[in-house]
Image (cartoon, rainbow, N blue to C red; front, top):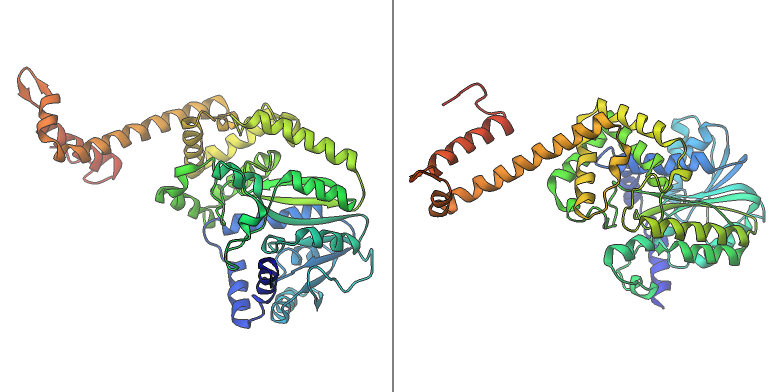
Length: 420
């Protein structure tokens, strides 16, 4: 059996165990870290792009993407290779009083007549399988002319940028079955759409704040910091922070290119449009070239924004004024991009907030340097005494004491009001 065949078989059977299904079902509603943001972005994309009355959900799982469509009145048929998963999905639908049709099926051999559905959605499914070029024609077959295919994939463009080198499909297949992730480049997707007679409706980047197996080349060492992980974890409970992150993802990140983030949502229409696809690809390349130095340059992508730059800044200012953690989030990103010579996030800021953010960054840099110096003082007393001397009198010991006191009172809030 070939590597690809073994992988397909393993992935197909992975979710048939009821215990695994129970774990997965709980995970889908787990409000932890950035999981909530990921779910919201993917479900919102399905709601935004799934048109028509009849919708097919391939690899429906627990119905995360479908139940909201049912709730707004669309009819959904869900297929999955796991009966245990379908049973769990039906249970969740019945809890909400929703009628859902489900049946067992493989994702590359669907038991439906041609042109049966207005839209086909599939969340977190295709990313597990290497034979996507065989799957797309089958998904097109069951979709009506003009209908839509909506699914998510990981970005090979981003992966290459993160590694700083080309990556071939064969290399990705060397992963263990449990860790394999399909990654597709925008250019390859356009070529396959042309071959299948599909039109690019949208490729929507998302996941600037998500990990999920992707190393964000823009964030770099910021992703390794416990303070960054802790800040992102507050999205689970801090509504203001969550809404700001959602705003940045949907109003800014979604307008960029597939190199900027580790994931993107694909929206294809069942109609041939080779000329339109190539025009989309040329425009994407043009923007990609311009964003290589400054990936978050709103002036450069102004034509893609859903509202004017002034309106966008106004909304961003409202979010930032209401949330200290949101300002901290933007500050971390701005500091990282500035260090790379890639600053562009400040485009989101109206002048007053821009000044406040700069002041906050300066204070944090002062605290960092002070902490670094405090750590060095006990290790280099002779050097400190030499450097900190006035008129022959060494000041090192007193300086160390006063600095530590400042760190304790101002940075950590200890012994406030007590002065030596």
